[in-house]
Image (cartoon, rainbow, N blue to C red):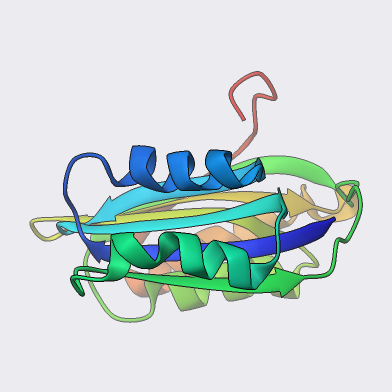
Length: 170
């Protein structure tokens, strides 16, 4: 079986998710992971599926992209198998006035501490910038990282919280 990474981006309109999912279902592709969001009126979806070849999927998505409003890419990827989290799951929330470098600085602090960002979402609402990230952290840094994050956040003029993730909500 082929494992494929597919991205679809373009101007949002109703029905894109249904259109893409129907194409993949007709091909016998099993969706294993996906994420979709709207970014300032633009549609963005990334998914992993198992089934047909990349060429078959590209051909089948052709009618959805023919008018130039959507762009779809299909790449065969190597299955990694089941990945076991290497640490404890946390949710880091950052909010404050918008400025350059917030995501870079906050995620660098997580990385330097040995953590891994597993999901990230940002929103700009007026002048308020909000970051919500799921992170896996080694047990030995969970006592010191909140202070390090607070120091980085203070330098940026933003607020940060780090809390254990509720596994029922992830």
